[in-house]
Length: 174
Image 1 (cartoon, rainbow, N blue to C red):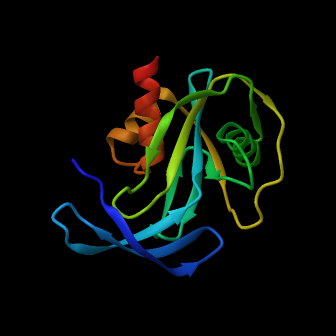
Image 2 (image 1 turned 90 degrees about the horizontal axis):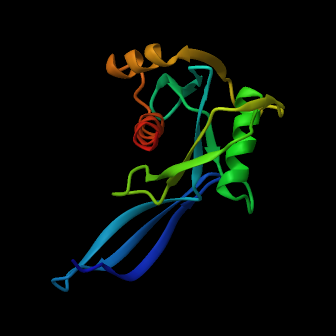
């Protein structure tokens, strides 16, 4: 399989979290086609499990138009490593500091149109060490025993991709 050759890239929008560009690329047959690309600096997600309980955050997600249960997560700050970002986000959203952060893997959110990659982590030992929450977030923290969490997944109550992917990777690596 051949990769596509970038011919030209035009920035169409630059916001606080994303950029949008339109790329013209040469495909293997020599034709030039356009690709719309959402450029995202990346994010992390952390699956916190303690004493057989999963900690999730519940928040309204404007693009989805719904209130969702999901793992604590967030986008990279300036020059943060994935591990630093994961620790900061977990502290901001749950007040927990992970004592044993384990990297589960990485997933592309929507590789057909976005560069966003999420680094997924797991932890099961914590100390309390909260940071102030982001001013634009309205988050509720919930604790669910692992069986209830599995039921929520089976019943379609958990539909966030990073949450599903992190639990899948967690189960594979146990």
